[in-house]
Image 1: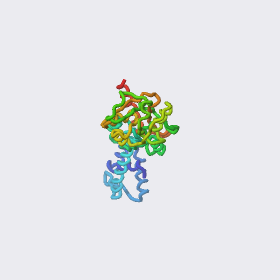
Image 2 (image 1 turned 120 degrees about the horizontal axis):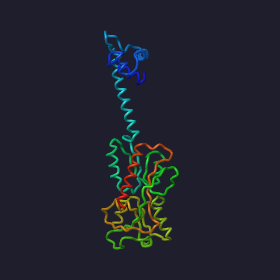
Image 3 (image 1 turned 30 degrees about the vertical axis):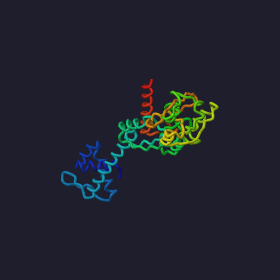
Length: 299
């Protein structure tokens, strides 16, 4: 039996006449009668019996009718759910977020949830290089990472470029509003990453290009801990602007680094030449629109 035959059988039971069932199904009577006979032959039992002017349902027919209703209902629900997942109204959004995250991400996800309330989420936070591997392994579909990295495997959308800031304890009196790398190279610095990873490399490369030798006393990829260390005067740090915007309640002061050699690019990536789900497409569209809107407000 197939789902079409079950729908035929439901119509016969409910209409109690082959002619009425055929009219309901928009087919002629002979094929419908043949389909009923085929089902009875396959099951080896009578499903329908003549009962005067109308058709009656045998006990076997009643059992089949019960399951036929359930199965056709499940098929309809499956069709609707698959269609909804296909257009992004349902499904799961899997995304990797760089350790420094994105300013406004909670607000963005709130907007996404309001628009697509049936979508569920899996969010990984890690260093950019690890996020790239998660995308390759299909553990997450999208990732927001720090550029540049080896991105031959990925499709990429550049999201924004941001400056770096020198941060120190509020208890210190140092600069006005801006500094240069040469001004801070001798300060005891805590880098907000570990050797070999994105932000660490960016900062060290900037010092190298300026032919400067920074005084690195520590590395720390936990941003909350790093800010605590700065606030208690263990050392100073260099962080992307995102950190300044996200962590406002620490006893620190920030000075924009004006050297053109140091800035951070952030991008959205997904695996090249692979299907991107509609949930991911919808998030990508919302993210780029959100960032563009914020950029327009700042100009």
